[in-house]
Image 1 (cartoon, rainbow, N blue to C red):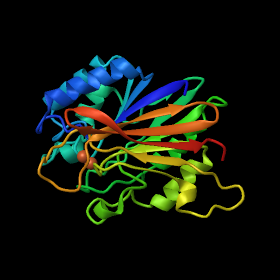
Image 2 (cartoon, rainbow, N blue to C red):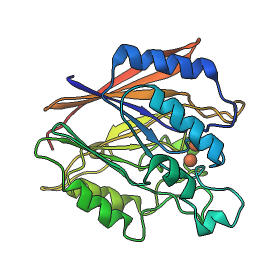
Image 3 (tube, protein in one colour):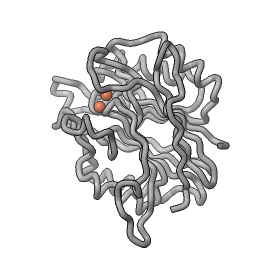
Image 4 (cartoon, rainbow, N blue to C red):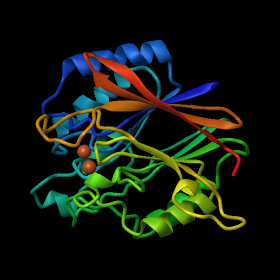
Length: 266
Ligand SMILES: [Fe+2]
Ligand SMILES: [Fe+2]
């Protein structure tokens, strides 16, 4: 693989932070040298300024460029600001809730799937999906087209009752695939799940496959909660292949648990 992306999610800065896990990530990045770090939301636990600045400083300190999108924990919890200026702190620190990283090999479109009027569930209403499709179509020929959003389009089923997939998931998935998305990255559920659209949908002629990867949690804001995993994804890609490696935090280190390889041909 000639290019690598580090994908982390759900750092939840401000709640049960683990310096040893952060130090291990810094060493991991130094060793593996990804060209881009992607953080798919819930960077903070309460969306507070100090939490946002802290997680920004940590991710920036890793070295590679960082692309981040907000999660449902990155807006004020109980405050008029939740509805009047929900994105103010995120945008102050990160510049935008919908970043784009584009180069000859990689075109990454970040989306804001958070809905301030809902505590948990996400959606892409209000023109967000339309904008995403337009930005995906601006990709250079041959570049891997990646979409990043907090709320999952595919996940392990045992958390589905509490943390449902993105609203209108089927319609969104179809629209993103039609726009040429090769890879969709999410978090939110704190469990790893990696698969391809063809593995759960029979596709018709002209329909496109797309790889979906939901990252485990990087943080563990409620250490005693069952049914959550801690780790990260490392994604390699070249002209033919997308490869997702799942590393889980175990025994004081990130250990490789699985490697899944997909053909880019669709
Ligand atoms: Fe989270
Ligand atoms: Fe979340």
